[in-house]
Image (cartoon, rainbow, N blue to C red):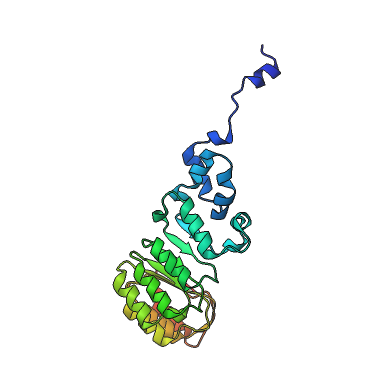
Length: 254
Protein backbone atom coordinates (compact mmCIF):
# COMPACT_ATOMS: atom_id res chain seq x y z
CA UNK A 1 0.00 0.00 0.00
CA UNK A 2 1.35 3.41 -0.94
CA UNK A 3 2.10 5.77 1.90
CA UNK A 4 -0.03 8.93 2.28
CA UNK A 5 2.91 11.06 1.21
CA UNK A 6 3.56 9.08 -1.98
CA UNK A 7 -0.17 9.04 -2.74
CA UNK A 8 -0.50 12.81 -2.45
CA UNK A 9 2.65 13.40 -4.49
CA UNK A 10 1.23 11.30 -7.30
CA UNK A 11 -1.82 13.52 -7.65
CA UNK A 12 -1.96 15.72 -10.72
CA UNK A 13 -1.32 19.34 -9.87
CA UNK A 14 -3.63 21.69 -11.75
CA UNK A 15 -2.98 25.36 -12.40
CA UNK A 16 -5.66 28.06 -12.46
CA UNK A 17 -4.64 28.70 -16.05
CA UNK A 18 -5.75 25.14 -16.92
CA UNK A 19 -9.42 25.91 -16.31
CA UNK A 20 -11.52 25.39 -19.46
CA UNK A 21 -11.73 28.51 -21.61
CA UNK A 22 -15.54 28.51 -21.77
CA UNK A 23 -15.72 28.24 -17.97
CA UNK A 24 -13.40 31.22 -17.59
CA UNK A 25 -15.53 33.28 -19.97
CA UNK A 26 -18.68 32.33 -18.05
CA UNK A 27 -17.08 33.39 -14.76
CA UNK A 28 -15.55 36.60 -16.09
CA UNK A 29 -18.81 37.72 -17.68
CA UNK A 30 -20.14 38.11 -14.12
CA UNK A 31 -17.22 40.24 -12.87
CA UNK A 32 -17.06 44.04 -12.90
CA UNK A 33 -15.61 44.94 -16.29
CA UNK A 34 -12.94 47.27 -14.91
CA UNK A 35 -11.47 44.36 -12.94
CA UNK A 36 -11.15 42.36 -16.15
CA UNK A 37 -8.78 44.99 -17.52
CA UNK A 38 -6.91 46.08 -14.41
CA UNK A 39 -6.65 42.76 -12.54
CA UNK A 40 -7.85 39.57 -14.22
CA UNK A 41 -5.93 40.18 -17.44
CA UNK A 42 -2.67 40.40 -15.48
CA UNK A 43 -2.87 36.86 -14.05
CA UNK A 44 -1.82 34.84 -17.10
CA UNK A 45 -2.23 34.69 -20.86
CA UNK A 46 -5.19 32.28 -20.76
CA UNK A 47 -7.06 34.48 -18.31
CA UNK A 48 -6.30 37.55 -20.40
CA UNK A 49 -7.60 35.84 -23.53
CA UNK A 50 -10.84 34.84 -21.78
CA UNK A 51 -11.26 38.33 -20.26
CA UNK A 52 -11.09 39.86 -23.76
CA UNK A 53 -13.85 37.60 -25.09
CA UNK A 54 -16.80 39.65 -26.44
CA UNK A 55 -19.25 37.61 -24.36
CA UNK A 56 -17.80 39.33 -21.28
CA UNK A 57 -18.46 42.75 -22.77
CA UNK A 58 -22.02 42.75 -24.09
CA UNK A 59 -22.91 45.29 -21.39
CA UNK A 60 -20.40 48.05 -20.73
CA UNK A 61 -21.39 49.71 -17.45
CA UNK A 62 -19.20 52.77 -16.92
CA UNK A 63 -21.44 54.44 -14.32
CA UNK A 64 -18.84 53.97 -11.58
CA UNK A 65 -15.71 53.85 -13.68
CA UNK A 66 -14.07 56.73 -11.79
CA UNK A 67 -14.06 54.63 -8.60
CA UNK A 68 -12.89 51.42 -10.21
CA UNK A 69 -9.47 49.79 -10.26
CA UNK A 70 -9.00 50.93 -13.85
CA UNK A 71 -8.30 54.47 -12.63
CA UNK A 72 -5.85 53.12 -10.08
CA UNK A 73 -3.87 51.58 -12.89
CA UNK A 74 -4.25 54.32 -15.49
CA UNK A 75 -4.42 57.45 -13.34
CA UNK A 76 -6.76 58.98 -10.80
CA UNK A 77 -8.02 61.63 -13.20
CA UNK A 78 -8.69 59.44 -16.22
CA UNK A 79 -11.50 60.87 -18.36
CA UNK A 80 -14.41 58.98 -19.87
CA UNK A 81 -12.76 59.35 -23.27
CA UNK A 82 -9.55 57.72 -22.03
CA UNK A 83 -11.30 54.88 -20.22
CA UNK A 84 -13.58 54.15 -23.17
CA UNK A 85 -10.66 53.97 -25.59
CA UNK A 86 -8.82 51.65 -23.19
CA UNK A 87 -11.84 49.35 -23.19
CA UNK A 88 -12.08 49.31 -26.99
CA UNK A 89 -8.38 48.49 -27.27
CA UNK A 90 -8.79 45.65 -24.77
CA UNK A 91 -11.90 43.87 -26.07
CA UNK A 92 -11.18 41.47 -28.90
CA UNK A 93 -14.36 42.41 -30.82
CA UNK A 94 -15.84 45.69 -29.57
CA UNK A 95 -18.52 45.63 -32.30
CA UNK A 96 -20.37 43.05 -30.20
CA UNK A 97 -20.89 45.46 -27.29
CA UNK A 98 -24.69 45.83 -27.05
CA UNK A 99 -25.22 48.28 -24.19
CA UNK A 100 -23.34 51.22 -22.66
CA UNK A 101 -24.27 52.88 -19.35
CA UNK A 102 -22.70 56.32 -18.99
CA UNK A 103 -21.56 58.02 -15.78
CA UNK A 104 -23.52 61.10 -14.70
CA UNK A 105 -20.78 63.51 -15.81
CA UNK A 106 -20.35 62.10 -19.32
CA UNK A 107 -21.03 64.90 -21.79
CA UNK A 108 -22.42 65.17 -25.30
CA UNK A 109 -19.04 64.62 -26.93
CA UNK A 110 -18.67 61.37 -24.96
CA UNK A 111 -22.03 60.21 -26.31
CA UNK A 112 -21.01 61.16 -29.85
CA UNK A 113 -17.71 59.28 -29.40
CA UNK A 114 -19.59 56.11 -28.43
CA UNK A 115 -21.95 56.54 -31.40
CA UNK A 116 -18.96 56.88 -33.74
CA UNK A 117 -17.15 53.83 -32.39
CA UNK A 118 -20.14 51.60 -31.59
CA UNK A 119 -22.81 52.41 -34.21
CA UNK A 120 -24.47 49.00 -33.76
CA UNK A 121 -25.26 49.60 -30.08
CA UNK A 122 -28.81 48.54 -29.18
CA UNK A 123 -29.22 50.34 -25.83
CA UNK A 124 -27.63 53.11 -23.80
CA UNK A 125 -28.28 54.91 -20.52
CA UNK A 126 -27.35 58.59 -20.46
CA UNK A 127 -28.27 60.49 -17.24
CA UNK A 128 -26.71 63.92 -17.92
CA UNK A 129 -29.43 66.57 -18.38
CA UNK A 130 -26.99 69.40 -19.13
CA UNK A 131 -26.10 68.21 -22.63
CA UNK A 132 -27.40 70.38 -25.50
CA UNK A 133 -30.19 68.76 -27.48
CA UNK A 134 -28.25 69.20 -30.73
CA UNK A 135 -25.41 67.02 -29.42
CA UNK A 136 -27.89 64.37 -28.26
CA UNK A 137 -29.51 64.36 -31.70
CA UNK A 138 -26.12 64.23 -33.44
CA UNK A 139 -25.25 61.10 -31.47
CA UNK A 140 -28.63 59.47 -32.16
CA UNK A 141 -28.23 60.02 -35.89
CA UNK A 142 -24.99 58.01 -35.86
CA UNK A 143 -26.49 54.87 -34.33
CA UNK A 144 -27.97 52.20 -36.62
CA UNK A 145 -29.85 49.69 -34.51
CA UNK A 146 -31.08 51.23 -31.26
CA UNK A 147 -33.86 49.32 -29.54
CA UNK A 148 -34.01 51.35 -26.34
CA UNK A 149 -32.55 54.23 -24.35
CA UNK A 150 -32.63 55.63 -20.82
CA UNK A 151 -32.43 59.42 -20.57
CA UNK A 152 -33.97 62.40 -18.79
CA UNK A 153 -37.41 63.72 -19.87
CA UNK A 154 -35.73 66.88 -21.20
CA UNK A 155 -34.82 64.99 -24.36
CA UNK A 156 -38.40 63.98 -25.11
CA UNK A 157 -38.70 66.68 -27.76
CA UNK A 158 -40.17 66.47 -31.24
CA UNK A 159 -36.73 66.34 -32.86
CA UNK A 160 -35.40 63.54 -30.64
CA UNK A 161 -38.62 61.52 -30.82
CA UNK A 162 -38.74 61.94 -34.59
CA UNK A 163 -35.28 60.38 -34.91
CA UNK A 164 -36.22 57.51 -32.60
CA UNK A 165 -39.45 56.84 -34.44
CA UNK A 166 -38.21 57.06 -38.03
CA UNK A 167 -34.63 55.80 -37.86
CA UNK A 168 -35.09 52.81 -35.54
CA UNK A 169 -38.01 50.52 -36.53
CA UNK A 170 -37.28 48.12 -33.64
CA UNK A 171 -37.18 50.81 -30.95
CA UNK A 172 -39.36 49.47 -28.12
CA UNK A 173 -37.96 50.43 -24.69
CA UNK A 174 -37.80 53.85 -23.04
CA UNK A 175 -36.66 54.67 -19.51
CA UNK A 176 -37.10 58.23 -18.29
CA UNK A 177 -34.56 59.04 -15.59
CA UNK A 178 -34.71 61.66 -12.87
CA UNK A 179 -34.71 65.21 -14.18
CA UNK A 180 -35.99 68.71 -13.49
CA UNK A 181 -38.54 68.41 -16.30
CA UNK A 182 -41.41 66.05 -15.53
CA UNK A 183 -43.34 63.90 -17.96
CA UNK A 184 -46.44 66.00 -18.65
CA UNK A 185 -49.44 65.40 -20.92
CA UNK A 186 -47.84 67.02 -23.96
CA UNK A 187 -44.70 64.90 -23.75
CA UNK A 188 -46.84 61.80 -23.21
CA UNK A 189 -48.76 62.56 -26.42
CA UNK A 190 -45.53 63.19 -28.34
CA UNK A 191 -44.00 59.93 -27.14
CA UNK A 192 -47.13 58.02 -28.14
CA UNK A 193 -47.31 59.58 -31.61
CA UNK A 194 -43.64 59.37 -32.56
CA UNK A 195 -42.80 55.92 -31.14
CA UNK A 196 -46.13 54.02 -31.19
CA UNK A 197 -44.41 50.62 -31.13
CA UNK A 198 -43.08 51.20 -27.62
CA UNK A 199 -43.44 48.03 -25.56
CA UNK A 200 -41.79 49.02 -22.29
CA UNK A 201 -41.91 52.41 -20.57
CA UNK A 202 -40.35 53.10 -17.17
CA UNK A 203 -40.59 56.44 -15.38
CA UNK A 204 -38.04 56.90 -12.58
CA UNK A 205 -37.71 59.26 -9.61
CA UNK A 206 -40.51 61.67 -10.49
CA UNK A 207 -42.29 63.53 -7.71
CA UNK A 208 -45.71 63.15 -9.29
CA UNK A 209 -47.43 61.98 -12.45
CA UNK A 210 -50.99 62.87 -13.32
CA UNK A 211 -53.69 60.30 -13.97
CA UNK A 212 -54.32 61.96 -17.32
CA UNK A 213 -50.72 61.34 -18.35
CA UNK A 214 -51.04 57.65 -17.48
CA UNK A 215 -54.33 57.42 -19.36
CA UNK A 216 -52.78 59.03 -22.46
CA UNK A 217 -49.89 56.56 -22.46
CA UNK A 218 -52.12 53.54 -21.86
CA UNK A 219 -54.64 54.59 -24.53
CA UNK A 220 -52.33 55.73 -27.34
CA UNK A 221 -49.50 53.21 -26.99
CA UNK A 222 -51.31 50.18 -28.44
CA UNK A 223 -48.21 47.95 -28.33
CA UNK A 224 -47.31 48.82 -24.73
CA UNK A 225 -46.82 45.72 -22.57
CA UNK A 226 -45.07 47.08 -19.49
CA UNK A 227 -45.61 50.42 -17.75
CA UNK A 228 -43.51 51.05 -14.65
CA UNK A 229 -44.30 54.22 -12.68
CA UNK A 230 -43.03 52.88 -9.35
CA UNK A 231 -40.46 55.69 -9.33
CA UNK A 232 -43.24 58.27 -8.98
CA UNK A 233 -43.96 59.36 -5.44
CA UNK A 234 -47.56 60.28 -6.11
CA UNK A 235 -50.32 59.48 -8.58
CA UNK A 236 -52.87 62.25 -8.53
CA UNK A 237 -56.67 62.03 -8.40
CA UNK A 238 -58.59 59.51 -10.44
CA UNK A 239 -56.22 56.60 -9.86
CA UNK A 240 -59.04 54.08 -10.31
CA UNK A 241 -59.60 55.18 -13.92
CA UNK A 242 -55.91 54.80 -14.68
CA UNK A 243 -55.76 51.31 -13.15
CA UNK A 244 -58.79 50.26 -15.21
CA UNK A 245 -57.14 51.53 -18.40
CA UNK A 246 -53.82 49.79 -17.79
CA UNK A 247 -55.43 46.46 -16.92
CA UNK A 248 -54.79 45.31 -20.51
CA UNK A 249 -51.01 45.50 -19.96
CA UNK A 250 -48.96 42.40 -19.20
CA UNK A 251 -47.19 44.31 -16.42
CA UNK A 252 -48.12 47.49 -14.59
CA UNK A 253 -45.85 48.51 -11.72
CA UNK A 254 -47.16 51.29 -9.52
